[in-house]
Image 1 (cartoon, rainbow, N blue to C red):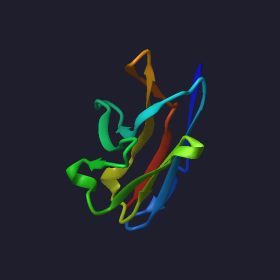
Image 2: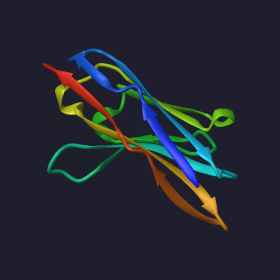
Image 3: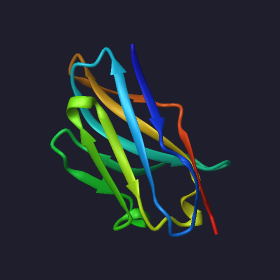
Image 4: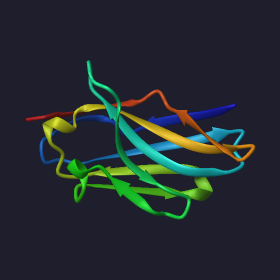
Length: 119
């Protein structure tokens, strides 16, 4: 069994910063990619950023230059540093951890953490 827990969300004014954390624990032998997604009411969940086990990062265009994803492999933890936040960044942010199961990557999700950016 795998547990994924996000933290660090909150209320911040536009232009401010937040740092999200996500810890994976449990039956973990090999984590490949870790990533962040977000979702607002009535919309589909959208991808925000990913970091591979080789520390290769990718971002959606709207957050490039403002968000930074990083990971601590020893702690099975991924972070999302969010700077210059905008009201449109308001969403529930979810962490996804991809773990190899018999050679096949399986995604595990957390419960999400709310980020609210006021104008």
